[in-house]
Length: 255
Image (cartoon, rainbow, N blue to C red; front, top):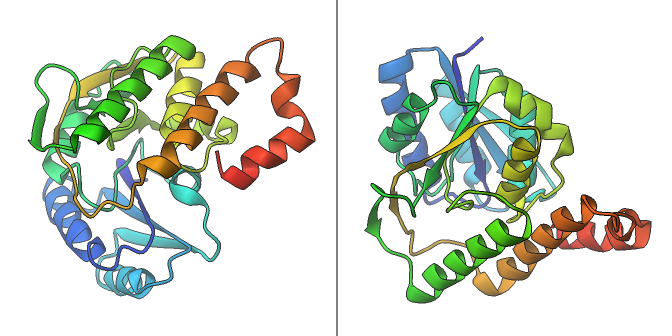
């Protein structure tokens, strides 16, 4: 079994995926040899991402491709990655390379007595090479305030790419994860926190990608509804969420 599994969800990433894979393979092969795996979860791609990844797999035996015709969302792709991952340590990173291989490795080296480690742009020591726009920074900070106040998560940054879990943590919570899109990170941390796992938040070097597919107007309502769902599902009003009619609305929105 490999020591490390890295999951990379990818949707229409034909322009960036090879560069990301080259960086990760070159870096982690030098440190782990063949004792790691890269799982590229191509999620309903309609461009040339899949042929590029399959070609890459043919010449790099540590890289595996799992492809889905219908879109499952970033979170859905990572959930499937957790199910396929074999490593003692499991992490995921964005296909755009916003967290580079060296800093992902630094996160892994912080995984000592804790059950998991998450990257943070908002703790002391973080290095932001290319900042987000002012509107994105305000939205991010406001959202994290809501997360802390409404569902009690203690982390300053829930949305930064680069989350490392020990295998037993990932496997124990994967079947409880329901958010398949932009609310996935909150769902993941909420379920890990609920089970009492120790998750360490550490500073990261991070760069905003100007050609990111993230659209605030689309993801903010989804992420807000994710918080509300998690808040209600653990209250006496749980029936509001488990009602089939309400549940179907959440599924349609991929919350």
